[in-house]
Amino acid sequence: MDESRSRRGAIWVLLILFILLNAFNWWLSTTSASRWQAIHLRWNYLYHVFFVVIPLLALLFGRSKAIVYGLTLHKWRADLVLGLCLAIPLIALPFIADGLLGEISVKPGVARYGLINALVFQIFFVAFPEELLYRGFFQGELNRVFGRPYTLGATRFGLGLFVAAGLFGIAHLLNPFNPLRGSYGLDWVMFGTSAALGLVLGLVRERTGGLIAVSLLHLGIGLYPKLFVVRPPSGSAMLAAWLVAILVIVLAVRRSDRGVPG
Image (tube, rainbow, N blue to C red; front, side):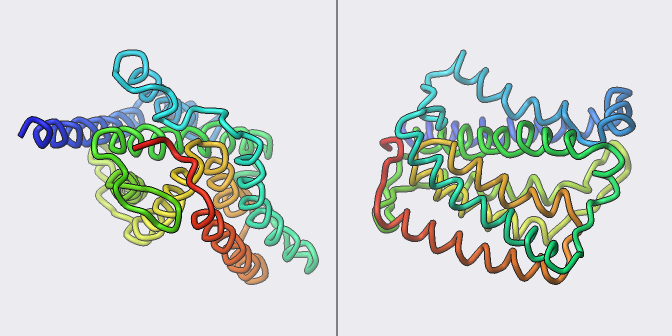
């Protein structure tokens, strides 16, 4: 009875934190700081800072250890190799496809605000922070409470994999939604794709037990579409790259489980 109550309480705490984080973003978008960001930086740096702040505060004042959130360098070289094997094809193949046909085109917003600005945001404020929050904090906390009783190949996972993927999908579903600005749109396509990607990212996190490989995969997924206009050649190349990535992930999941003990 106490264990069941503890588990329900853990889910409610995480859901409330998720709601408060989104509500904070809605409020932030109405402030002068957000307007300054939009004018000078384009990207929402301030909001993404809290993707790191929340897990760090939880580590300072909670019961979890850093390794539960995937903050470990255990076998980092192997994780780095895995992450690069996943990310490089997703970035390089579309770039090569468009480059060979002379169709590479930087997105207007990226050209206006600078490529370095976009790279800094995608690498240091999106790829790692989002993985720390969703696959580290949310998935890690739920793994700690519910364990990882299921297996896929040699990789163990639990309820945290699905809840974190669901929250990841909902966060992208709410991208156009902001009641403080009178915007009530929902992006159902992004919900479906992001939730599915969340499952893939979550499996990589469980496979390695850390955030190195999964952060690199996250970067590989989003970097080319965020920086360049996606045309038929690059779209086809990204599909081919995804087939390579899925094959690598399947082999990795089947061969080894070095995740955090559930």
